[in-house]
Image (cartoon, rainbow, N blue to C red; front, top):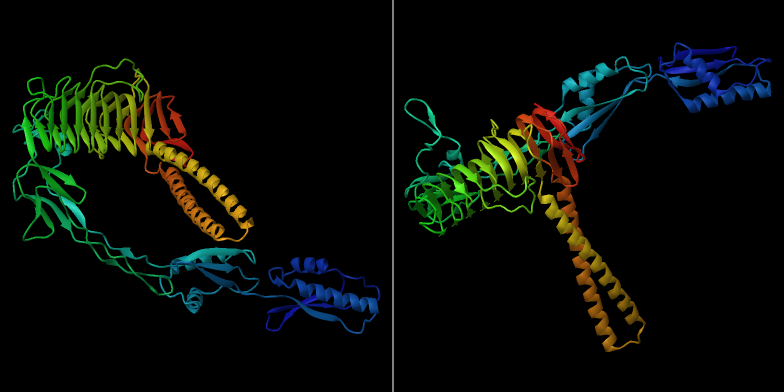
Length: 556
């Protein structure tokens, strides 16, 4: 490409291509011109593709016309400074800066970028360090390379806190796991202190007032309002009253056993009894019960409040509407099969609406609405509960040696299994089965509703073909009303099914199994359709579900 000359002028912003055709010149192509520029000192400038093509056309026109009087000169490239653009999030709480590296031009200074953002109304939460990092990254970039960074961030509003309730009396399960220290400084596992009871006027629950919260702002300077906390009313159960001098304090109105509610408390009448055995007969009481001994074999204890047993529950049936605390153990007879399943028969059966706390449990069936706590071991048992905790959350203790355990949330203890233990089955997020059963019913209901709608629509179409009459008009109105009713039922069922599918998808979140020391082989875990069996002994760690697809064990 002889006689092709390139020079800069117009204050150095334009690259001019100059070509003097001669008699022997051949037509040139745009690609030749681009290659020439790319191999020159101006390769970092921005090529104007349409102008390159136009320049080639002008040159080729002169060659074709044999016109060689003067050269062709035309701009084909230019210097460009870095290009800036900013994208605001829908919430206006974040701004992302996009920078296109310069073509032979300059990068902006930090202050220039800040002024650019201000011109786009982005005034608040500007991150100067993020801008500096972005410019540093783009300093040695290829022309046209794109860089992005979040350079402004609003401050979210801090919503207020609703009123919350502080329990002012020790709970029964806390007492069961905290043996007393004697004068010599030794812990006596049999001495658990005084029974938990209150007298009239004793403080039970304090309500902490709600907080207003703190307003935030978005990146364009608009205020983001905080949602103030709500004042939640006390749940004043039987035997309680608000203090006359402090409306945020709930006190006992009578002597008895305190029972903690979600938003307050109640004070139950308390029955105190030595033991539940053949001398007392079965016990059924509409309040709390303290058993200063054992609940012995074959006996039945039913209570509408909290129950504390200072000794053992031995092959008995116990039904409690509150919490159950057993200072010693819960013991049943050995089951016919070591393979414990949902159909296994037990001689010791407990149904508790609240929490269950005991030193140990073996050969017993427990259904609890709350958490099952144990200190020593949970052996060859069947437990349905919200969660299972050995020891306390800070220091998981105790062993799970064999049985079936189904929880909504978590299982935490020191060890699960043993070198020669029988198989253990632990099912997490047990509510999934209920969701799935309800979903199957909804799927069947939707099928029925669609069939009915099809029949109603067919009836309506048939009525439309009949001659006009009062009877026809009445039947059409009834048919339309019937269609609307079943269509509404179908839409309701669809929404309910979608909500259940959402629950099923998220049921495993927050479910885990934590062992402080060891997880042995032949322990079976389930979560919905997922399952996992340990094949070797694992050190302490946490088993959970990742990506809703498989179990994963994390040591530590």
